Each structure stands twice: as C-alpha cells, then as structure tokens.
Length: 414
Image 1 (tube, one colour):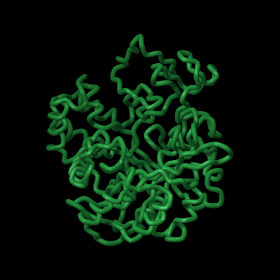
Image 2 (spheres, rainbow, N blue to C red):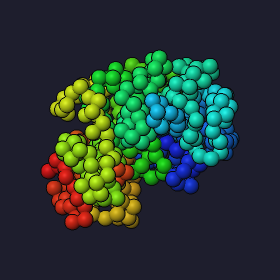
Image 3 (tube, rainbow, N blue to C red):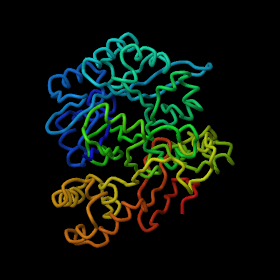
Image 4 (cartoon, one colour):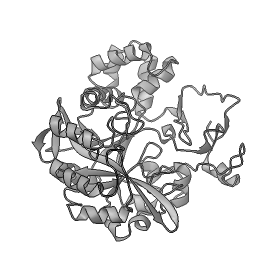
C-alpha cells in the first residue's frame, strides 16, 4: 500500500492561516493533490480540537478518517527559552497516537501557554523541559517529536538566528529521543548529507501549509510503502529511513540564500562571507539562509554526491510550472483550466508530477513542450532563482530571468 503523507500543516486557528483551512477543504484538496494521509495540525487549540473530536472517525491504530481522507493527530509548538544567555525559539512537531493522549499533552501545555491564542502555541519551556514532561505520558511510544523545518533562521533547531550547532547542544541526553528532522522547503537530503549529525537521522518532508491550495498543501510530503496503515507502522518506517520524500528545489524555499528582503538584495554564502555577512545596501547583518548554515556545520563542502542514504524526488508544484510556462498568475483562470483538465485525465497532481508514463501524458496533452516541461520537473531540471529572507524563489524557464534594476542580486546563478 502506497501512502503519501503530508504530516505538518495548520488549521484556521493558526496565525497567518486561511480561515477556510478546515477538514472539508483539507480532505477535498488533499485528494486532488494525491495525498491519502494528512496531519491534523493544531491539536493544542481548544476550538480546533473540538472540531477534530466531533468530526474525525477513529478507525484504530492511531489513524482517523474524515471524508475518505486519513488523518494523524499532529501539532506544532514554539519553544521559547534562554540558553547560554541567548533567547532561543525552536519549532517542534508533535505527533500523538490518540485523542486521549492529546488531552494529556494539552493539560500539560496549558500550564505554560494560553492555548486559545494561536494554533501553534508558544511554550515557555526549553526543548529539554518539554521532552521531560512528555516522557511522563508516552514520549517514544504514543508521542513523537520531530524538529520542524530544522534549518530555517529564526525557528529551526539549526537556525542561524536562534538555533544550535547540534541537536545534542539543544537537547542534551534527550537527543536520543530524536530520530528524525524535517528538512523544510529550503533544504533537501543532498544538503543535509553534508552534515554528519543529520546523516544519522531520518528526514521527513512536509508542507507546513497555511492554506489548502495545491501549490501549498503537499508541496513537500513523505511516501511510505506499508502492509497496514497505522501510527506505529509510519514511525517504524521513519526510524529505519524506509521512506521517500517529495522535496521542492531548495532554492524555491524562502530562506535558501542570504539576503535582505527590504533591501532587495540576495547573495550566496561564499560571497556573503567575502562581504563579512553585511548588506551592502543598509550595512546591517544579512539574514543568513539555510545553505550558509549547512556550509557552517557541514564536514563536506560540495553538493556533488548525496551522503544521505534516503531516497527523494525533487519537484515543483504543478501550478508553479504552469504559471512560469504560460507567464500568467498562479491563480488565474487559464492555469486553473489547464490544471483541472490534467487532474480530470490523470486523477491527481502527484500522478502528473511523478507517476504517469510520458506516453500517456503525450496522448492526452496536445502541447509537447508542456509534456517536456513536466518531464524536466520530474527529473529536477527546472531552474529556480534562490529565495531569501522570507522571499520565495522564482521559477525560470529557458534562462529568461533578467533582474530588475531595483533588485540587487549577487548570486552564482547562471
């Protein structure tokens, strides 16, 4: 049984999230994307948890169902604490096997945060303190913790702004309870393989989506081959690195390169170092991106060979490549018309992106250049101008990109 799972997302109760991010839209658009297992997001929020309890059907073994979509109980928390005289903020994903376990987690967390304020609560707890508390109610068995988007500057466990140089530095002896990290949009297994510690961990990939649109939901995901779908089976596969991840090109992520969004300046790590990591526009320190941080912590300094054992696909969402190809807005009627036609013929987006034989695509799609573009996407051959400091990367075709005068870029991109 092939299970394609997006196991980190948010509900309508999280800040900066679509107010239509509910179970109906998640299940509907998840199926169009080709997902068959979703994280619930935000189980710490009382109102969202009430909806989950009212609508989800418990089908056993830690799996729930709504509208023919399977769900796993999941939330994200922001741990806020001081370490070595420095303020730290680290985001962690928490998975729970049952609603009863969720109630126990929320009972603990309510003592350290107002859970009604945000679907992703800020806990006044260090990561070690949180792990201590969760151990008392089943951490390692009915509860699992995975550091979220591990490399992003402000909230990743390795982040340049408030992170650590290793999981051991952050978690001490509790680091043995961490068996996986989430790559985030701005890194992939190839980059993680540059760092010795991550080569010993499993890599998960999820969308961290704040909306249900198919260029957000499932833009990154995990593929499992299972005999039986269960909470325990999923995490046994994760622990043994027996999964394949779906990754976007890391350049597509919002924090791949160094830069300043307000100044319209981005730069690769090598040139940033030559500039003392200072912005030439305003003179202030640059926001150092994921690639820079990987170079800092890595014992391997090139990306020519994958030193991580996990398999992965590198593809961009279908809407993104259609938008770049037809040179119209990602949410335009033209793109939706073409997208809907492809879904009608091939069932779901992942079939188009990953699985449908090219001969079948050629029979149904009149435009041979579009089929060729789908092939290039499937083989990870589409170029992306790297994102930086909260700015998504930009898909380009046929080397057509020409920076506007107001954008000051010093990249190695050609």
